[in-house]
Length: 212
Image 1 (cartoon, rainbow, N blue to C red):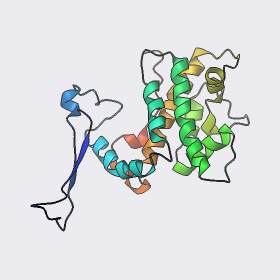
Image 2 (spheres, helix red, strand yellow; image 1 turned 120 degrees about the vertical axis):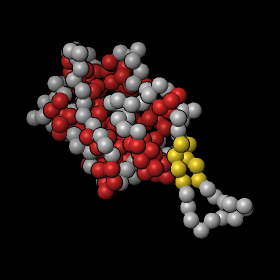
Image 3 (tube, rainbow, N blue to C red; image 1 turned 90 degrees about the horizontal axis):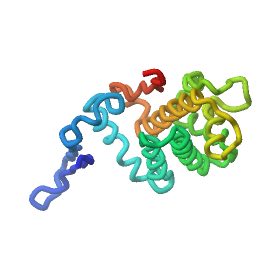
Image 4 (cartoon, helix red, strand yellow; image 1 turned 180 degrees about the vertical axis):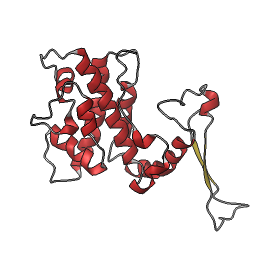
């Protein structure tokens, strides 16, 4: 606990019923002192709807699409005691891992990082133009796709490029990349026609809290 559990009635008195009943259970609000209310999960119903939509897809594709690795990188990026550089490297790895798994199943996708990330955003229908605009370091007139708006900071921290990246660029790129990954996961595990059932997960935006 407070991990959610999906309970299913499979038999009554040893016989399988003609109907199906499933329900998600969790006491995370009580056990965690409402730690999951607020910005990350804003309504109590959202996580249960999300789990209901995404559970079977997760189980069916977890190995081929390396969901566990992707989410582990994402959780690393949330650790407050880490530097922005380290968190940027983690969230970049999360996005790239999922992008390369998608590209592995499509022989028409080129192997460079820019192409596979652009393909991932296109395949999942994730908007990225607003994130590219949020990034203070991305120049939309360059050769890079808008989905790879964080390329400068990514290369600086992952490839150890000797580039002096301003802190504002590191910050905005990280916040935008974090939002991009959340959008990717939301789209990955929810069908398009069901996304309007969510209260706010369908409208995730980056935060500029540098001066808060």
